[in-house]
Image (cartoon, rainbow, N blue to C red; front, side):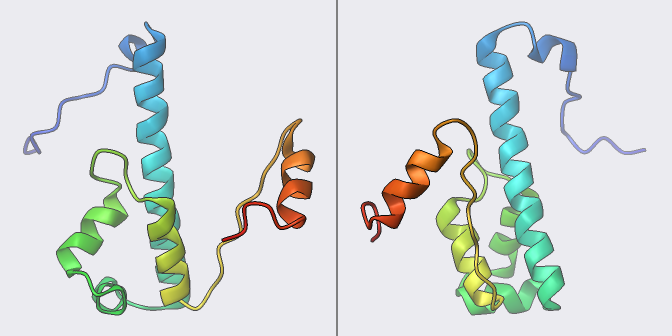
Length: 113
């Protein structure tokens, strides 16, 4: 098997410090967002090239986005653009103790842009 140039991940070493654990979580979030974008596109039944055309970006850039590459992976703004381009809406859920307070705050119109 050819070496892709990527270093193997030592999961035990990642959990040694809070900083390294935070880096691992951020990478996991980026991959999750990338998988969501790919899933939205595939569910819409369009090719990566077609989605790139709709977003007015290159197919190569679309590939990078779907891989979760980059310093932070796909942004929330990109998730929303992809959803619109695929004819769906993106609803973010807020959960936890403060979740109902935040939802109430948003329903009053504060924070709506």
